[in-house]
Image (cartoon, rainbow, N blue to C red; front, side, top):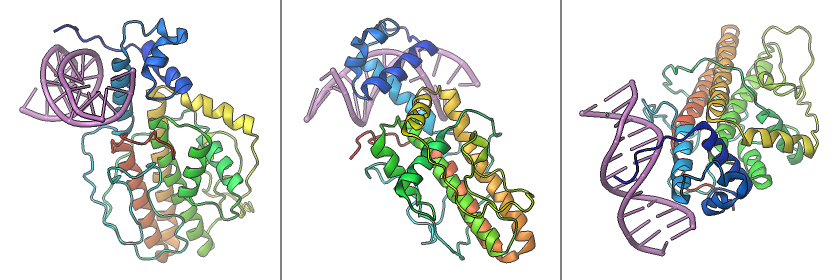
Length: 300
DNA sequence: TTAGGGTTACAG
DNA sequence: CTGTAACCCTAA
């Protein structure tokens, strides 16, 4: 056939990503003509760009497509609509229930989920989320839907990034949930997001802290500039980095489960919530594996 | 021109 | 054989 299958180079992928950041997904011709990328992409057509972007989006989401939507998560009305992403439903970062203050039931089978080791990596996603929470000014912390909506209204997000955001928010939800469990049984209190330091803060800080009184959700205000800078970095993440971040988000959820299991040791009553957390983790995992890039770049 | 469905080349 | 990535076809 006319084309001998020319594999995309890392440089080309970078150019494409940069192009999408600059002109937006869908503006393939524009990206191609932009002198900033025309050099590297001179051997590609606008259609090639489109196809490549599609492939990148898919692999970014459908992680290890192997056992895909196998985990049939029962929808104990508690945990609402989850993923599955009903074909066309506006933005896709809107699944899962929000908050669920003191949910009890939620008895899900939830088999074990293997998470790829937590690879440390850049992740200022936390900051982005905090920015949203701060702006939304909801003392108790905003629900994921609100956060996702806020962020999407402020910035244009590449498909793969959206997946990360979604997973992150889910992990965050697990975190918050556990915090409630702990408080309820007076087990070492922890703070959802105390400092804006680096990534590993989200929820891997609980542990056996002493008399820390981080009971409140102290949210530090970030400047728009800071957030913008971080976002810019996220946008330029390579597929590998994005994957690492995604893995981390999930591992955080797993860590949350461990926390819960320990809590349960001191209060069986907390077990129900631990299960819920597990379910959330699975949901996060599912999201990462679900390829659903489809129609989501159409902000409202 | 683009989005999306199809097809083909290839690695595992 | 199966899944994935690069490529092709075409309606809108």
